[in-house]
Image (cartoon, rainbow, N blue to C red; front, side, top):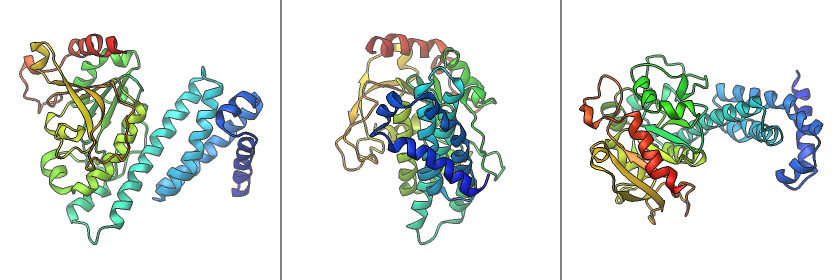
Length: 331
């Protein structure tokens, strides 16, 4: 297809939207034939977004082509909700859009730097990794960084939590087995830079200003997923959620929740009541979509590096108990 033909297809979509004031009205008035015009246009938009992404033109990828593709995918999903293909389109394009937003935040940060330390430049050169196909309004498991496998080429395949395997992933999937089976599980690293050693590589070399730029994108994505229970399995980094009011980062207003002794041994439970009133938080909004969400903070749970005693390790039964005794009754 030529570039002219591509833009002719785009104009068909734009013309359809020009007929109405908003998408809700469009859903009501457009015929199925009108809506299905998007099935031809969607891969063109997404494909051009992929091209821009590969050429590091992240602004164009995110704000132009992936943005239009996402509108098209959501429009199809709104009309044909029982079609799994349209649902998968939305999830895939949202994942690609998130990747672009991360890179865009990093590029904007770079513009304000006189020079970048060599070790940090090497970390940024590896690109990023983000778990794809995250389920909304279920359990979200969060970590800090994806590991680095030595391959400089950035992965560009939408891999879901359920599709991940290995020493790190298998224990976590065991803990969330029931929620994976119900398609109510998601995974997210707060900082998707690919590093293996959190303390000696990430914390030592990534400056606070860059962390804030990246975490702002992560917070938007978490807000979009809107989990009802968040399990942050890295207690040494709990301050990113707002536990340290002097350095609030995402700055959630957290109310501690009392639990039985056997759960208290494994972590701390909070309920998100809103956002802290502080000019130090990275999110410049007055409200959050996570009001009522529970946050359970516990030690690192996975892999051979975990030295937790058996009575401190989280189990599938523990997560089910958190959900059934705290989350579900406050639905």
